Amino acid sequence: MQFLIIAYDGIDSEAQARRSAARPAHIDRAKALLAGGRVLIGGAIMNDDNEMIGSSLVVEFDSRDDLNQWLRNDPYVTGNVWQDITVHAFRTAVKA
Image (cartoon, rainbow, N blue to C red; front, side, top):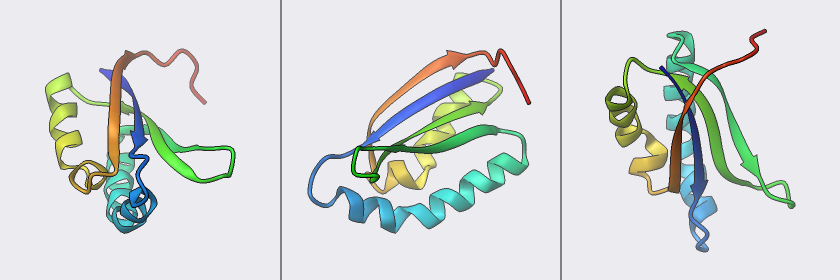
């Protein structure tokens, strides 16, 4: 099953510092999932000042439970970076 994840960072004064601290581990983990075919695309949501304020990903997992387990352990979740997360079932219409 494919899922669209839209996750916004906190908006407090420490939000950018938390993102910066957790980013290397988050990226390493995402690269491993990309290599395994789980992440189809992912990237940062930017504000008008070109600052990262969240993330969006299209991922593929066997079930929503598997996705939830992955999310619970993501450094952006455990590091309190993502504070507003929505997940939608998704179906890719066009592929490269």
